[in-house]
Amino acid sequence: MPNSLKNKQLLSNTGFLYITAISTQVLNLATVPYLTRVLGPVVYGRIGLVLGYMAYVQIFLDFGFTLSATKMIAENQKDNIKIERIISSVTFIKVMLSLGVAIFFWALYKVQVFDSINISLLMIYLGGYLINALIPDYFYRGIENMKTIAIRTLIIKVIFTCLIFAFVKGTEDVYFVPASFGIGCLVALIITLIDIKRNYIVKLHFPSINDIINIFRDTIPFFASRFASTFYQALDIIIIGKIYGAAPEVGYYTSSDKVISLVKMGASPIADSLYPYMLNNKNYKLIKKLLIYVMPVITVGVIIVGIFAESICAFVFGAEYAGSGNILRLLLPIAWVILPTYILAFPVMSPMGLVKYANFSNIIGMIIQVVGLLVLCFLGHLNIYTICGLTSITEVSVFLYRLMVVLIYAKKMESFSQK
Image 1 (cartoon, rainbow, N blue to C red):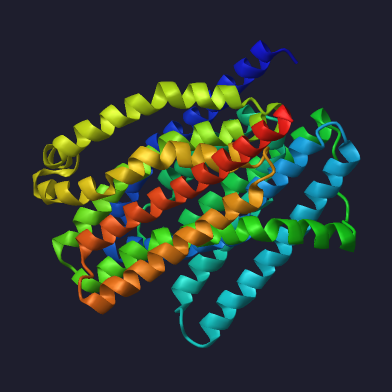
Image 2 (cartoon, rainbow, N blue to C red):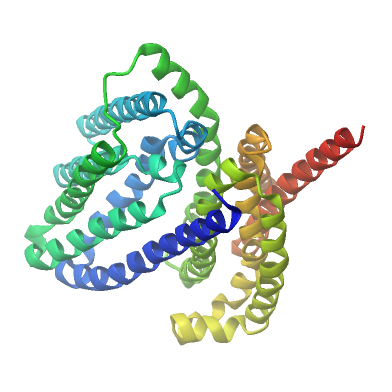
């Protein structure tokens, strides 16, 4: 395929991922206010609690396959037999993982960790998350077809939104919330499987033990990396909540973190579309050109937000959130490095053969964060400002580690080619 067509496909994939992200946020804006009013704070709080557990379940069910299986598919695009073995093995592993999660939650219910309402919500949501996990997004990522992923995500969100407005009329209808999500996922799964069978002539079969073991083993480092990253990023709000309780500082941090999450949402589609593209093309000049053009814009944006942090927080979240300004300033280094951090990780390091270093960088981040928190606690300086400052140091350290590894490798390859 000519470079012009490859670049056009990259832009198309990035565009579809942005459409997905934006449409998801728009539909969330439609359903969240409706559910908070119809269900009330107590019942909606149960949904929020269950979704907190589901965030970890989602990481466990994905198990890093979004990265590892994408890489496997990209490397075997023209080998349908190999692709069938990959998809069949990943599907089998995910079903087994889901059964393990279901048994775990049921055991917790038996020892009275959950009441009957929460365990019912958990199990219904778990069914939906399992169905969602079975949708082979990694296949479409590997063949660089993000359009199908975008359509699938939009189908789930539209069905979910329509069912919510149609069937959730009061607190007694709370079970329709996870059921609506599950129905949307089921429709999307059926459409996806039909598409794969008809248009790509790929069929599922019972995988061999060797395939299961090999794919599971190769994915463990990706899972460890994702888990480490999620662990240390989620730790902040837990600790801040314990320190400040119902004080406004918790709201200040949550609102500031929303700004950083928005930046991550903007960076993610670029990295996600670059990952399979770089596996197939290894166009490092494009990466360099992208960062040269984009980083000055990000730098100016970070400086402006830093200067007007209080005003921006008050305007976006309300006048009472002006106190978020200093917290947001402490988190801004994360906003500055997030795009190059994402791009250096798997889009750049994976085609260079440096996957183990990309995975290990998140382990390093977790160690820095945990050790830093322990030191701050020991010194008696553990507060919202030192936690935010430490988090920025952690994220910048992860970026610098990845950059150092890439530069050292590139220099070695340059020296080798000159011999």
